[in-house]
Every structure is written in structure tokens, then in C-alpha cells.
Image 1 (cartoon, rainbow, N blue to C red):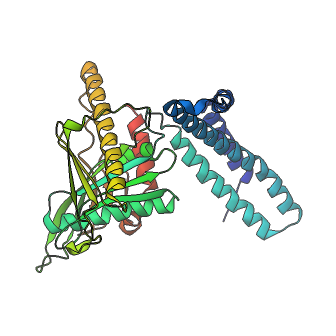
Image 2: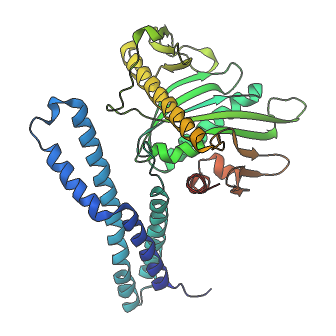
Image 3: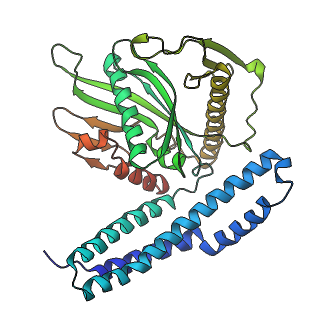
Length: 367
């Protein structure tokens, strides 16, 4: 095996990180952070909770971005010193440790490079992910549950915080739908490229004749509302139903009618929450979910108007975005980016980085 060219790798990474620092304009970010710190220190800031929330949220995001880039630059600058020490002492294990650190920095800079492409208005926000079974009967319900697990595993791998708000279980197996919140920097921008229909082809475990079935699951991703979003909901426009929470197979998981379903009559949007302990908490959470969905609908309408002005008919990329074939061969392929892999098990276990990175790059490229 050829000796690893550490210095060349470090130089290439330094160039990439330098480009990222220019794109995000680090000096400007530091000035912005200082101004936000001063604004956050004003004694009467919380007299206007909406404005205060906006300032503190932005300050947290800007500080996090500065710290992430600065930390990577420091780790990159430390690598030549680690290598020099390891070589000077002729310590093979220390050299291997330096190689592992270089691999770790390479991965982190790659992730940051993709994140710099997330510059949409809501990309930095937390996300609400809803997964629904579509065509395919019991297989589709089972597939929807598999897709839900895939995304929750992805979040777990990346240490993203998740909170399941509602799950509607199917009668025989799987789920009709589920909604969960993902709390992480750029959660919406990252996961929004997964929105659309995911198609599964396999030998159905529910078919006594072992025939091949095709089933579909729909993924919807919306940004979590901010206090500054001004999504007004007229009480006359909503219908609120309360019911008893249920688990798999229809068994009750709560002895009171604490689960809440809200129907927004003008749009037809229906949201539910059964995760919280009280009806009041579930209602508040369901209203927040409804606001997020209405915000995304408004955003989509604005985009559609702009697309119409530009004569752009390529905006609806959210139908069948990806196929997962388990029989007669093993393949997962994204129909937008052509990114594919034969390691279906890894993908279903949440190893989605390749698909998500390709999706983010695809979304930013002219096509």
C-alpha cells in the first residue's frame, strides 16, 4: 500500500475550508454576532417577547456557525503538529491516531461544505416530518413504518433530537401515518430534500403466494414555525376533536380523551397530537404543527407564483423521488440525482448521507 500523502490531504482540506470561510463571510458573521450580543444584552429586551425570541435565536445560530468553522480550522492547524510529533518519535500508533483525526476532519468539512448550500429562508430551522402510507394496502402501511424507522435512525446516528408527536397505526401491520419533530441546526434544509414519494419493490411478507409487490410511502417535511412568522389562524376556521390515544393494534395507551385532532377547514389540513400528557398540551402542540404546515403552504404558493413568472414548470420534484428494490435484485436509486447503492440494508438502517448530500447539491444546481 502506498504511503499516505498527509500533507497533500491537509493542503486540499485547507483550501476547501478557506472557500467555505469566504462563502459564509466569517468576518461579517463575527461582526453580526457582536451586534446581536449587544442587542441581547439590552435590559428591556423581553418586554417584546417576539423580538427577543428573534434576536436570541439568531444569536445562537450565528455563534454556532462561527464556533463550528473556527473549531475545524483549529483542528486542521493542529494536524501538522500531530504528524511531526508522531514521526519524530517514530510512533506508529500516534501516526494512526493522526490519520484517524484527518479522516474525521475530512468528514466534518465535507458536511460543512454541503451545509453552506443550505441558504433557503427556512433551511436553518427545526423540521416536522410526516410519513404516510400511500398505495399498496398492508404492504404500504408496513413500508411507511420502515421509512419512519429509517429517518429516526438517521437522526439518531447524527445525534439529532427527535420527538414523535402522533402515530396512527394500521389494523394489520405498520402505520397509516406518523409525525415527528427533528431538532438540529439546519434540520429542515437537510431533510427537505427527502420530501416526496418513496417506492418499495419486494416479495411481500403478507402474500401467501410470495408474489412481488410495489408499495408507496409519502414523506412531507415542513419547517417549524418561529414566533416571528405571523401565521394567524381564525378560531372559526378550525374544528377540534378529542379522542383516546391508541397504540399498535388499536389498544388504548391513555385512559382519557387527551389526544387532539385539529382540522383547518379552508385548507383541509388535518393534524393530530397524542404525545403529551394533557389535552391542553396536545392542543398547543397540534396548533404549532398546523402553523408549520400553513407556513410551508404559503411558502409553496409564493414559489409557485415565482415559477409561473419565470415559466418554470420543473418545481414539482416531490413525486416519486426514490426506489428501494429488494427483489429481484438489491438497489436503492434516487430518480432526481441518479445516486444509487446496492447496500439496501445500510440505507434502511438510516445511512442516508450520500442520498441527502446528492439531493442538496441537485437542488442547488441548474436542471
